[in-house]
Amino acid sequence: MFNKEVYIGRRDELKKRVGNGIIILFGNNDAPCNYPANAYRHRQDSSFLYFFGQKREGLVGVIDVDNNKEYLFGNDIDIDDIVWFGYVPSVKELAAEVGVDNSAPMSELRDFIDRAQQLRQPIHFLPQYRGDIQIQMADLFGFHPLETREKASLTLIKAIVAMRRRKRLEEIEEMRKAAEIGYDMHVTAMKQCREGVTEHYIAGLLDGIAMSRGCGTSFQTILTQHGEIQHGMPTFRTLEAGRMILCDAGAENQEFYCSDNTRVAPVSGRFTEQQKAIYLSVKAAHDWVMAEAKPGVRWLDIHLGACRILTDHLKQLGLMKGNTDDAVAQGAHALFMPHGVGHHMGLDVHDMEGLGQVYVGFNDDIRPSTQFGLNCLRCGIPLEEGFVMTDEPGCYFIPHLIDLWKGQGMHKEYINYDEVEKYRDFGGIRLEDDLLITADGNRLVGERQIPIEINDVEAIAGVG
Image (cartoon, rainbow, N blue to C red; front, side):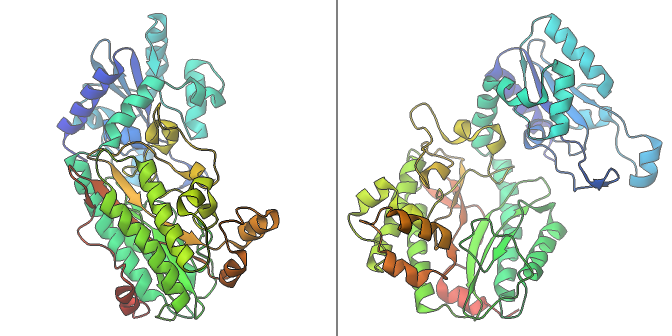
């Protein structure tokens, strides 16, 4: 937890941005796994963490902007829970730790909301993603649980996005810590990448590193020989000679800040010439992003530039043809890269995605696209100092997508389908790093870049 002045300052800024009314931020409750007493690992809501700092379940933070008062609602842990889980500070003590003067049991929240509604104070809340909180809100406000998103406060969403999107020094330090854990995770994956080992075994080692050094992984570890599957979960398949593993994994540190990196390693210890060619194509796009990302540059243009770099390389390999600018404008490259080049990061690995991506990554002038591939771009706006963005171009050979496009004659003026068939069982390659946008450019969030040069990856692969 940061010192309480950080949270006081954040809440003061939020009051100014919202202007009036009541702001209510729900923390998360425990979520049962397969019966009530067996819960998933608790993970606090990120916006609640940002403004109220406390990680305990069953809390609600309230800010009365009109009267400049702040409250923490929640029930104290009783003796039965203390017997099983140990002592937990009272809600009053938790409130004091983050500079909140007022606390009350959860039973008093309804009366507080009722008074605010009688006084016709605007009530600002965020869209919710958990069913139990939606039900709690429905009980408090008298609407259907599924209406929480449409009734959420756009004023509050935009205020929080504006604050959380630009990372401050204390946040950058926490993300550095997460990146150091991520470094160890990915080097371990490379070392364990050898024939006969299962995907699940390697993924389990990575998850263990994250749990032993922080709070766990920032998302479910993606580790697969079928790198063409964007979110390929690890299976009990054993690694096969001649294939590659794609590992997309990240850590969540003790303050819940994230890392997110992707690397590819050869199971046999050496990339084939075909694999090297695609790897270098992706790396060229990755390096171009690092060279070009800086304040004022639109992330949409960064994405399209990376797509043009990839297209030029695929043309050299005979997989694509025609005018590069036209091919990218028409979306032909999306057969090989059907996703955006990166996303915001912070307390969420896809930072603030739950608040509505249109508010996080777009504005009145730059809107989301409906074009296949480009519709998965999560940000298009100009970069600002303090943004943390992932740089993650990729190249994939997805058999079902190839068959669909080829059967429909999609973009045949730009794609050499006969050559593409030679890569049908290739898999996929993605290379991802986390970039902090600085005053005049960018730098890696962590102190060390995970090995990315082909020679360095080959020197590590399979030595564990």
